[in-house]
Amino acid sequence: MTLRVTARAAAGLAVLAVLTAGCARAGETPSGAADAPRPAAETAPGDAVPWDTVDAFQAARRGSYTETIGITGGGMGPMTLMEETVRFDLEARYMERTVSVSDDMSTDAAPGGELRFVYTDTAMLMWHPNTVETCGTHWIDLTDAASAELTGADLQPGDLLIVEPLEFLAAATGEPRHLETTSSGSTYEITAPADLGFPNSSALLENPGAQEAIMGMDAVAEVVLIEAGTSLTISVDLTEAFRTIAPSGEVPEDVVVRTAWNVTRDIPPFATDLPADVADVTCMGTG
Image 1 (tube, rainbow, N blue to C red):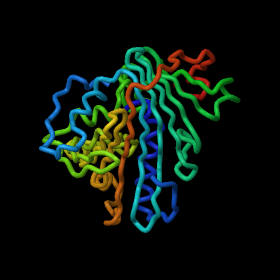
Image 2: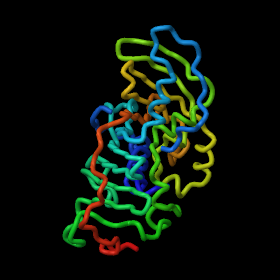
Image 3: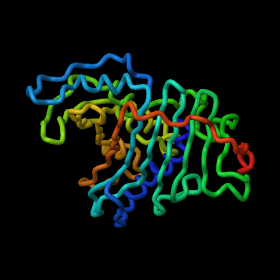
């Protein structure tokens, strides 16, 4: 579990609350794996964008991605529980993450609006909207805080420099299966461990049995590659994984839960300097 779990935990719990309560609110529509072995794709039509296109993404040292966790079905309109954007520069050992949480899904740890995180090999920083009065700044230094208290695990700053969608692609098992090629690109189906796409939450931290079950599950994902080869999308069906940790197990049959990533590689250089005005986490009464 990582420091981003502080924000993502709220989203994971919100998913369960929505599914089990049958909430009728409608929302908005919804790094280091370059050397991992990659299965070859099944034979695809000659006009298909080749699966090998993903190799350029695995080799990219700088890029960005958006991640959306959403629900459809269950008598609800499409609902986005959380969205985040990430920029990474692996040469500079720097990653910045902006997490958007809807007001309906907010908690004290993840209030409605935005949270921001910066990770390097030596620092874990968080931007919080409500800390100016108590801390004198929005930026909080979490580097020396007790990891177990904040995240439920003992992690070092460098452990957070993971490009999640590329880790997911690198872990694919079997042969990617070509589904279709249209003017929008070529769609492939892959299978990968479900826990790599699952939003970590306190529901998992407090339930070792659910953790073990999800660790043993596979998830099916669709990957869309475009001819230009500068971006790709991944949509992971995590419905069965969420059913596993639902408190009552009563998830409507027509509910679908997905994590979706849109990845862009080789973006222009951006500043990787750390903010100058940073307060110790103890100003928040933690640590």
